Length: 507
Ligand code: AMP
Image (cartoon, rainbow, N blue to C red; front, side, top):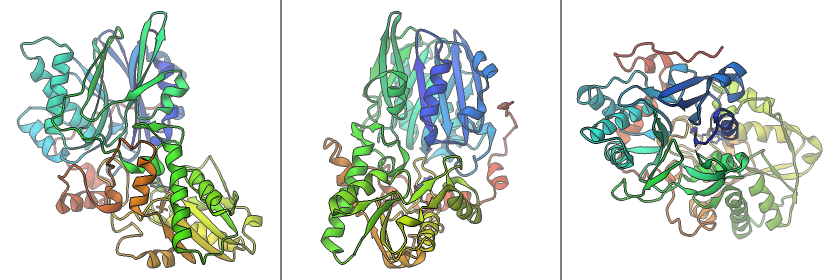
């Protein structure tokens, strides 16, 4: 998972891009980058770390121009901590293009071969985003051969990308001296919205992974980019779009955005993330009322932060007290991304601390948004016991996570997922709780779809193993899992043509 951003304005965009990336920081804390365009020249600064650490005043001053894109990266196998794979990526031909990508291509290895052998293009990193950029560059070269560079040629190149690329991709790209391009894969898996603002000098546009970036920068949300649609805004602020770049687009937003990834104040595909989380709480309450009346719950306690709306609504519907039982230390990194199980366990304790008075002698129902490895839940249950809880029930607002994610979410391998080959009872035992309640997948779908009934399908592969793009074979899953397990050094050595072209130095 990553966050992407693109802006065409009438005045310098460096500060807007910086502020916008800060609003998307929850989508990735591993690397950050900005490219601005001033005439035919790109200015780039990127590196490993969070936005506030990567950009110094002198870097910001050098990012001149009224058009730009940005990226915040979440670490995935092979790429974590590599500054060479910080985005945006740049390619000098044709025209000069820079690109930021959120998602994952499931046929990147095959495309990489094609690019090298047939298109005579060199991809220097292990990043599928660099592959995507080169496919776009090749298609643009083809569509402008003997024709001029115009929106029609650009949309035709995006059609070529859709024909060749499989998987999930939300993209923003700049074409030097020309404008900002954005597109979303034909399944609409990863989110992408755009908004506008009218200024005295003319229209300005902002494209972002989440609407929260628009709100805070004063742009008015226009709508989500449709699956398979491309939009292009030239450097003067003229807007063009084409909804027919893909043959059979269908909208299948990733349901995990609503469960955990997105900020609650964002609206994705017309669905308020916050409302879906409230609905998840209601459906958990219904399940408990239907099937677990015997549970004598004294208090409901959320595991901060994403589960709060669900826990609150669950408590309201059961008529049980809602209390804050854990305090979160904001200054510790996300536990999930810490390497090594021992480190992860330690950082759960650093991150969350129990308020004993809420637990002593009580039967508590703890609510989390999801259980992935189970490290967090196991530690939390133990902390609740140490704080004096009598009985500990645990509810997950999402169903058991049983399958790897191939569409750009950093999910562990099946080996590491606590739900692999375990029943709910086994998982309950593993985390040390007295009772475990999982959301049903059908109820999760309903909780989200209820907010926008026009959406009838969601990408739910990590819960049901149904990979919507249809090309994900057991062999592919085995390959990506073994890459994940491999030492970084091994996975870095994947392409024998790799040169060290890293120029992303954070000073
Ligand atoms: P664990 O079960 O210890 O692996 O962690 C589960 C918790 O991590 C959930 O409660 C979420 O808050 C959070 N989480 C879920 N999925 C992810 C993810 N892909 N990246 C980071 N954190 C996640």
